[in-house]
Length: 209
Image (cartoon, rainbow, N blue to C red; front, side):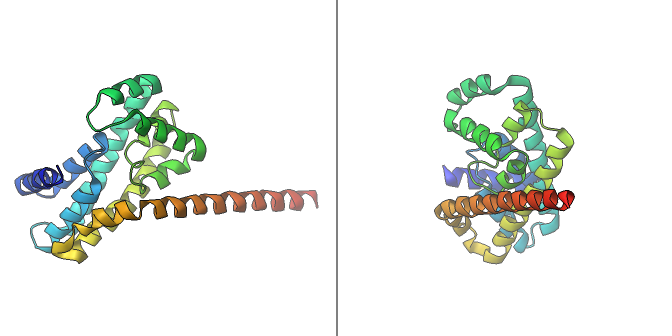
């Protein structure tokens, strides 16, 4: 399965160059079983071999991320959560729990979930759906998605560039340490929440004086 995906991505990049990275990332957003942890490091490795410009790969990857995110956003807005669950239940390698997880993540963290969710494996693609279901402002959605996607794309493409022929270790590393990533994100969110409470209390006291 993984080797088939690698061969497919290579064939696209060989056929149309860096726009192929954007196409592959778009499809990765729409069909989450296609892992960006494979596509992006492979693009970085290809760029390190001189077959592609690394900045063009990054730009096209980010365009693909944004296009795929908006596709799922408007799909969520048009179809709704219940019908999406039924569709997910019939899709290959997509679970109803994946949709539910994205909905819960959005309900719990709100707008910040779009930015943070873009760098969380298993959440990053489907997080666009609840944003559409809840009719989040599309411009705000796009800005958060652009920033989060740019960080993720730059990191993984750069890893592929640096690691060279060992680019395949990126997927294993992300899979192995995904729980650590979840924990760090949770701590960051808790810290932000506490900071906002303290700031609100401070502002309240300042107004009282």
